[in-house]
Length: 251
Ligand SMILES: Nc1ncnc2c1ncn2[C@@H]1O[C@H](COP(=O)(O)OP(=O)(O)O)[C@@H](O)[C@H]1O
Ligand SMILES: [Mg+2]
Image (cartoon, rainbow, N blue to C red; front, side):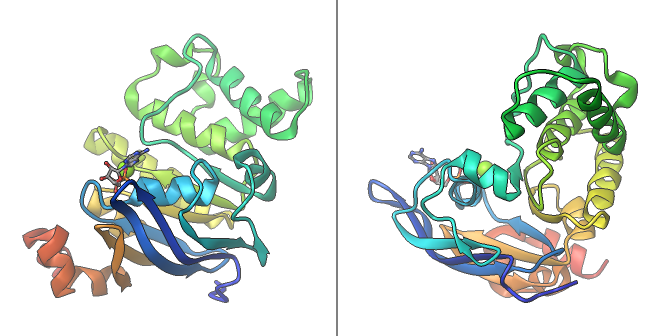
């Protein structure tokens, strides 16, 4: 697992909304193949950071480099072409379309093609198999249980063939069983060689999956280390984890 720092580099990145410093001079890098967790209280700037990395928001200042290229000024679809994909905290599949149609459309949009070929169906089937949704392929997306909607969102991101996958709270609102199942899916995506950045409040899953965790608070990085290190960090315990941190640290 490379930690060259040349895969994704976030350099002195800031995003201000009027007077509010949602992301405040954040610098970090992610190595190719790494699994990075991002945690922190509500409003800490986690989703804003994803919006900056994916190009949905323009930074107030700072730069983002991906595989050695400055992508700070690029549009979201240009970044998708380079291999950056994301899921949203609030899921938004096409409700009336089937599970498979949702995946095919994501692939077509990414590739800017106009019509569905058999080969697209095979590709979509592979992606659905990967996230454990192949048995649901003909169901309308609106009829999926919540846990499977989260998997569909990941399938749609995978359909763009990403090298970097950004997941915004994929475990939120899931039952214990759904969390366990999705955790396996995400682990296996990372094992395929995709670099993953995971924003998550479900700490057990985040700690189990992440090799390294960054903690954001009021737009700033207050800790960056292994799950064990951040759990025992005094500032992190005070700002976010409370007693939970000590529980995780002691296993
Ligand atoms: N488009 C926006 N306009 C104004 N304020 C925003 C906008 N997006 C986020 N914020 C504010 O920025 C801060 C960080 O939000 P967000 O990145 O969503 O936090 P998190 O994902 O860590 O909960 C919050 O105070 C939020 O209200
Ligand atoms: Mg958020």
